[in-house]
Image (cartoon, rainbow, N blue to C red; front, top):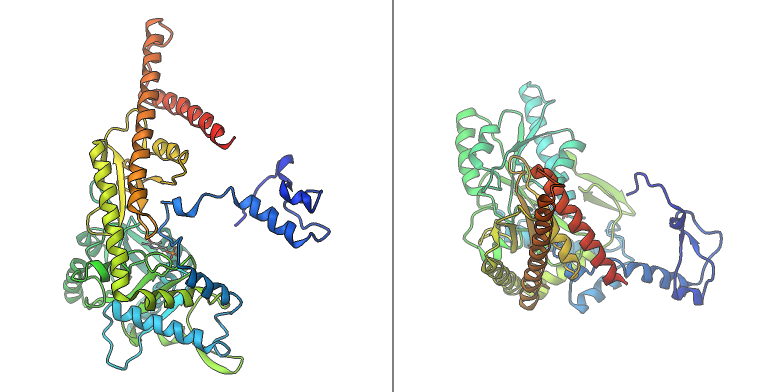
Length: 493
Ligand SMILES: *Cc1c(COP(=O)(O)O)cnc(C)c1O
């Protein structure tokens, strides 16, 4: 997306080294060139420029799959020219999607009879899935309020302040107030007691997260369900629950099968999961499953007569690729329950290796949980000399992409680093990362003692008398930035 950008002189054309074998002139960056260029040149120019992207395998910031088997890559390439929406022309792709929906619904314990079909749809990701689920709740609530002759213009949704940004988008785009339960230091998920307190007659649903984006922790959906049943009994409302299982939906069923978070709980009416996270497919697929037909208002389903047949659809977009659906089906049949269980168990174990390695340094406080999404979130025990952002920046030098971020209200004073453990993050990489983190700490230690020695000297000469904590912090950051930039340049050159 481009909102605004002023181009500098050097910015207006794209130069390329090897492509100069084919084309001598540079290409305008933001305007279409007058003439065509050879296909080899186009390839070379783009390929050269893309080299400067980070390495997806070392991108520990993301939950999204970065590796699949070559057989699946092949299936995806073979299907790249198939539009998913042409269901009549590609009935097999449609059928594969339906099989995936049913398999996932069973995985989430949807109350289905022997031959009963599940209700759900493949989406571009959990964000689209959440928009659809949210719309269904909003419409159901509105219909009920209308029927009761009650006002239906102020819907709200209750979540924790730790929700992923797509919930804020949903609230904004579909005009639903987001009522957030605040976090506190040491507790980074939605407190079910407080959530139920926020519920009122205008609440379309409470959204719980299975696998908080911030620290991977599973919210207590069972407690939420039990408390909400009580509240519904007292008030006569029937406030439902949605579970945002974007990351945890493909983890809990395999390695925490006893954990009750899904359709086993009566108030859970819909669940979303990202196929491209622990569903093990490349970016571009998510799923939303409804408990029963009654939980998805029929009026939201479009029955289109497109190129010959009646097709029910409930998606935000029309055309999209088929490859991701085919890839999801591949993973489900290729791995089976056993395979997913092995992958998830492996991720869990590698998370333990990383966590223990970090604990051994004695420098970090771990804020992720043993039961949850396999990730390690951690903060510095002592961030008075340098902070988590600086550790993150320094790790880039080794190629690691480890994000640092502050927690939402009311824990915004806490900063964490987060490493997501995906299937392709091996034990060797975990050990290597601990090693590199130690090196970074070492360098930052040395740097900060240099700065304080210098400060002491200045103090002696009477040049600097007293500084506020803020000034000191700024000074450290400045020196540190220069240091990192100098190093970075060295590496790139
Ligand atoms: C990743 C994530 C989302 C958004 O999912 P996409 O599939 O990237 O659209 C929503 N909620 C949670 C909890 C997530 O982890």
